Structures are given as C-alpha cells and as structure tokens.
Length: 254
Length: 267
Ligand SMILES: Nc1ncnc2c1ncn2[C@@H]1O[C@H](COP(=O)(O)OP(=O)(O)OP(=O)(O)O)[C@@H](O)[C@H]1O
Ligand SMILES: [Mg+2]
Image (cartoon, rainbow over all chains, first blue to last red; front, side, top):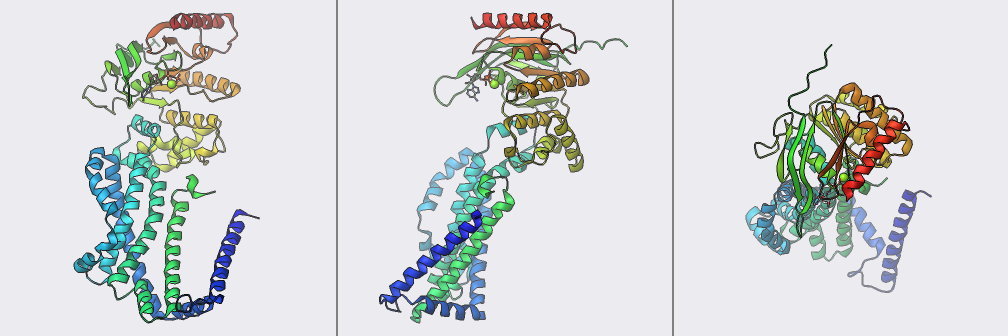
C-alpha cells in the first residue's frame, strides 16, 4: 500500500472513531441542547450549505482572514528581514517584541472596534496582529540561518546585495517563512472569528453567535464545522505552497 | 616568438601576512605568522602542511574572504584592502574552489555551476550551455538537472570545481579540491588540471594533503609549519611537463625531498 493510501485510511479511521464516540455520548443520554446528535448536525450543515446567505458570511470571514494574513505576511517579511540582518535593531526592538507577544491581543478588540468600526476592518487588524508574530519570528530565524559557506561563495564572486538577497537569503529563509505562514494562517482565522464574536454583524463567527442566541445548537455546530473547513482549506493552501516554492527542501516531502 | 617578459610584480603577493582568528571565548587562534609569498603569472604553487596549520586561512585571505590581521596582500599589484574595505573589482580575477562544495541546495547542478555567469549578467541559454559543457568535462554528464542532494560527495566536489572554472578565472585558488574523490577519478582530475593549466596559463594556488599530487602539479611546493603556519620551506619542482610518470626516479626524488622538508618543519 502506498504511503498516501495509508494516510488516507488512517484519517478515515480517526474520523470514524470520533464520530462513534460522539454518537455513543448522545445515545448515553446527553441533552440535545448540550450535544446534538451527529445526524442533527449533519442536517443543519446541509441546510447551512444550501443557503446562499451562508456563503456571503463565509465570504466575509474569508476576506478578513486572507486580508489579515496578507498584511501580516508583508509586514512580517519586512520586519523579520530587518531584525534578522541588523542585530542592533533586534536588540532595540526586543522589549517591544516581548510586550507584543504577551499582550492578550483579543482584549484589544473593543479598541479596534472603536478605531476601525464594526465592519471587517477591525477583524482584519486583529487577524493580522495574531498572524504577525509567527511570521516575523520565523523570517528572523530563516534569515539568520544562512550557511556561512554559502555566503562566502557569493562574497568571493563579488555578488551585489540584491543578488545575495535573491540567490541566498530568500531561498534560505523560505522554508522557515512557510512554517511561520502555516501557523499564522490558523491564527488569522482565530483573529477574524473572535473579532466577529465580540463586535460584528457578519461572518461565520457571527453566525455561530446568532445560532447560540437562538438556542439552535445543531446550527451552531454546523457553523463551527464550516469554520473548521475554511481553516483546513487555507492551511492546505499554504502547506501546498511549500511543495511549489521549496521543492528542494526536505520538509516538502518526496 | 620571444618568451613573454616576466611581469614586474607577481600576480599574488603576501607581505608579512599573519592572522589571528577571533573566537567566541578564550584567546584568539593564531593561524598564520609572517607569510611572505609571491606567485608569478601562470605559476602553479602547491601548499602543503599539517591539518589546522592555516592553509584554508591563507587561501581565504587570498580570495578576500578574510582580512589578514597583520601584513598586506597584493592582487595584480594593487592592495585590494587599501580603501579599508574589500574592493570586489580587485578580486574579480580570482576564482576559488572551497574545501566544502558549498552548493546551493535550491539550485540544480547546472544552475549552481552557472551561478557565477548569472552574476555577470550572462543570459540563461548561454549559461546553461556552458554549464552543461563543463559538467560533461568533469564527469557529471546526465546529472546537469539533478539537485545537489542527489549527488555523491565526490560529484558535489566536481560540481563546485565546475562552478569555479566557468568564468575562466586568471587566478585559481583550490582548497583540497580532490579530497573526496576515489583514487582513479583523482588521477584523471589531476591530469586534467595539469592540461587546463598548460592550456590557459592560469595562475593556481593549490592546497593538498598529498605530496605526490603537489609534486605532480606544481612549479613550487610551499611547506607550512604546524599551527601557527609559517613558510618552512619552498621546494622548486623543475620536472618537465607534461608530467605523466609518477614512478620515475626523478619524480620520486622530489617527493622524498618534500617529505623530508615537511618532517623537518614538524620539528
Ligand atoms: N572562522 C574561524 N574562527 C576561529 N578559528 C578558526 C576559523 N577558521 C579557522 N580557524 C582556526 O585556524 C586554524 C587554521 O585553520 P585552517 O582551516 O586554515 O586550517 P587548514 O590548514 O586548512 O586545515 P585542514 O587541512 O584541516 O583543512 C585552526 O586552528 C582553526 O581552528
Ligand atoms: Mg583547510
């Protein structure tokens, strides 16, 4: 059996076991308000997917996630390269980075709503904020991990700064950057959804809140499932980029 | 035709060059002391000495990768550090084969070999054409589009030699270029290098641990003392070229002399 087929089978078994446990819990008498049956959630999911309004909400969330992630990627690349190349700047910026790391960014949502309104703006900012650090830290790490022997080769050949960046720094940093991006895209989903929970009138996160207020637990579960699928698709896209962008790296698989 | 006039100044010169490697902790490592060396245009100089005596350091100084902590160097009669920083133009005629192949894992063999040409602005088609030619000449036929991790150690080393040769450097620095090769390939490559040198009249400084190899290739063999490296002796090799017979008594006599000098240098 090929590795891919084994992997697929394993995934199916895992899903089967989880569904079985879920079904058993329901059969054992869990209240449908607390834990609806898989069938009820499935029904709600189908209804949700059939409703065009759902896709509008999903579109809103997707735009927030992708927008926030894009901002974080751009900023993270610039800041990460700068901090990686300029040691004094990194030393100067370190306290700020630590503060940035420990501040509970979700607590900033009210401020963002105040500044950027109830629309997608405040969610994009929160998503970007959550995604920024994993990207920056990985870019910094990537830029630092340049092999001195490789640097010697280009120095000996008299390569310009630009040529060195293109032929050495970027390819060296790429695998780490992609690792950061994989984490970051998941964080961006969290940022967007939390933003929608706390101060929004649109998006899948808002859909979850509406279902909760209506005590429609199956619909709530179905909306969460949809959110998970969105996360899976985005994460899969970034992971797929690895195979295209750094096929030479061992992390890209065979 | 008359023999070309000998250049007034050698193409490579070190004057009182010494180097201390700074270390993260503890005293600096004294790698080289008082090295005075002159390499004439078209000359082939081999450098031998114990492991850790500073051979690589010396080549890195000649390639401008390390600024010597004492003394000065000249390339083509000018001090490439005169402005206080490395003058890339002064080092332009210098090509280097590193002790480690240092291939870029994200480029194919062909693109690694063609990299120096890309930096010079040569177009893709010509780059590939010349890189493939060179790869074939170095026994890498069929591996032009392979990635470095798919090569054996010796193949990587040959690819790195191709990368140094592709821009036909007037001055070629080679740091144990044949270290990872099997005996037969090594013999072929040594003979090929002699041919190349005879053909192009390039200047070569060649580090090796093999005394016969040094004697086979070089016009002069420079012997360094164990660390810190000083020039212990310089042995002229006046055997006629092309040299082919390493078992000839004249050849063996020079090998014995170099070995004796090296043992004396070890003290
Ligand atoms: N970057 C460095 N930092 C600190 N010390 C160094 C550095 N490079 C070399 N050295 C030290 O300088 C000395 C000479 O090193 P070098 O690499 O020049 O030796 P070598 O003659 O080329 O040895 P080998 O034959 O094993 O390659 C060694 O003692 C080594 O520890
Ligand atoms: Mg060495």
